[in-house]
Length: 318
Ligand code: SF4
Image 1: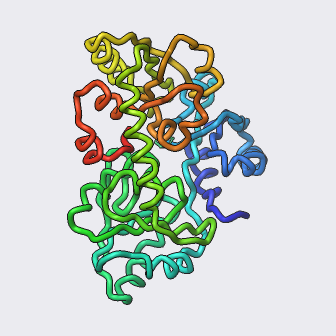
Image 2: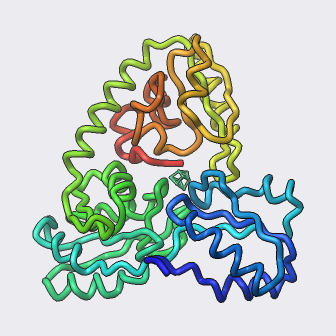
Image 3: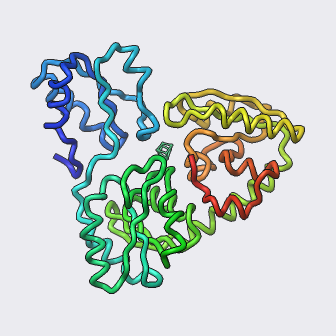
């Protein structure tokens, strides 16, 4: 058994309760190694046939509904991030001297939500006032952030001096790009705590420069994802119309995975606009053969929003 709780009893009860005979199990990449064990367990205990998805699974935005229906599966079991057994207190202790001010916005990912009451108590004993962000469109719990949902911490921003984000660098960076106050990351996976202000400033500068450059581009490919939670064709159509209104050329590109090597084939395109996962453009732009902008950044490039309005909304938004 690893550092995550896969709730095997609940899984078996659900399969039995629904009388499911054919099951597709989808696991995030970090948990795929558990797939064969889960498949054997389910077969042995319930007799159901199990298919473990070997395709990438990015989160709740990425349910394999089409694959499950092609298989004629009775049940799709989609594991999101599982509850973590990491002891978070050592990294929280390391983060304390880095916190700014006395009122702290405390947030984490679903894996560590159960630790928040203890972390808050610890910080209060150190003299801090701790506030939790509320829910967002995708983050369904108070105190939770998601790779593309930082609505709660943005709303909380006026009431706090700085933020403490408990989780991976990916989630800490998303938070830092979404708020203007200092975000401190306490990372239980690598055991470090650090301010992400420098990382934020660097990316904000790069994005500003890219948007300025994009104003001069002529031809855009607007990426639409087939994934249920990332599929925004209406947003793409509206962006295409805005671009054409400015005398630019734009084509809608429809894809499951947004793979840089596949985009290379569209040689006549100057830049891409991503209406799928916003983190594709922000986290690894150098992976792509051409510049790639988020759906919000292109609004600045075409003059609908100002750069300041974009920063106010936060750079990460699905
Ligand atoms: S859209 Fe991107 S950031 Fe949001 S849940 Fe999906 S993979 Fe994560």
